[in-house]
Amino acid sequence: ELHLKVGFSNKGSDLDNITKAILDILQKHDPNFNDSMVYVLHLEKYLTKKGDEFLFIEFKEYIEVIPVDLFKKHNILLR
Image (cartoon, rainbow, N blue to C red; front, side, top):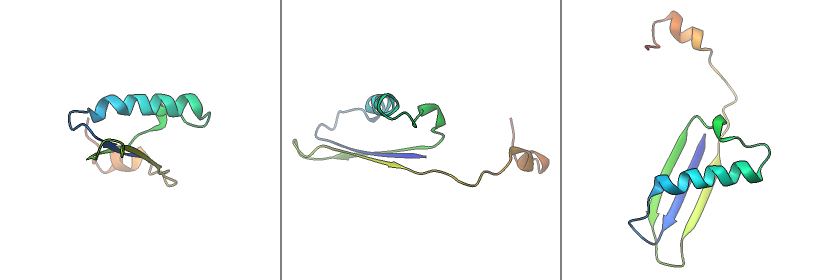
């Protein structure tokens, strides 16, 4: 799970455009990071004064994994 909070000084700035660039940079500079491992992505856009732009990145790792078969057995997963 990856949380991105981005502070833009221009309200016309696109959150989706910067997201791909951030994921590419993280993958290039961190050998342990691969954007294909990101299953949940939270994005937040903030407006700020020029010169006060920011980027906040938070990683969360899920330790417990529930087997998909458990859901299939109870007809919870639909295709």
